[in-house]
Length: 390
Image (cartoon, rainbow, N blue to C red; front, side):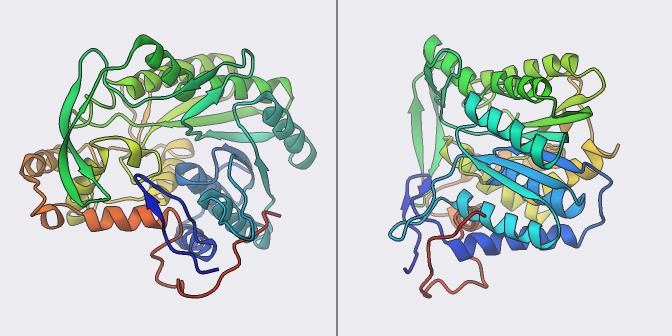
């Protein structure tokens, strides 16, 4: 079939198998051109099919020469419909990793469930014995609790009072005003249940109880803090409460791991499927990309993760804040960068959007998430959507 992007709001309903493969190969080539990292040898990545999770598998395999296990929840393709981008990403990564002599094990299922945790522990025991790094990079809009069966759904809302501000309508290429009513206590609690740290803790318990957590197990999860430009809808909103719970979980896991350690990596604002759904954030990222690219400071997912591994998890060059978090958002948070963003923000209009922001760059990165816009790919060619994982 001929696969073209079909965009609905902040999501693309199609994914290009060859384009996703090209995007993965692009990241692998970037890592291979960098110095090797004396890092982990057996790695588990939960949420390992897109974004920071995928970049973690790539960095582990091709910078650290590690064997990896990836857990993800992706829709497989059929002869009439494409699979999700994460499916094609995983297929491409696992082919490349195995060709390089690395074990690459994929498990497709609900990472919140006890079943997938049990299956993962069994595969690690059979294939790797134990792991020495566990990357928790799960992002989901809903969670069925494995103990109670209750379904929680996350919301993106302010807390305490309505939020009124400027956002970017990516479909219509225009800026507009948006008002979002505050979250209820129930919505706050459900967002924390979905996006907070409880499931990360459950994974740690499953790995330790199953005997597959190495004696010096290291684990890391990802968070974002941002600036006062995005705080009303992010850090001071429902998502911020979930991120605070990740801080709590980090401290709790550190106490569980007698000889290992747990870290929280504060990453920079990037175009991801998750960030695209948050009001205000696409406009902030479009401005930020313009400012950081002009200064030669811009990093994508793979650059961020490589720096996390080389200077933070397995080096001593990454900055830490008072809470002990690894600050990979240090370049974004530079005062001159933030001052430039704040100067542009109120001046953005429909007429000057393309001139004062990097909206073109934002859209390019968004499409690449689904395998579109890669220069080496012929998008008029007929492709087979059915791509196996193994």
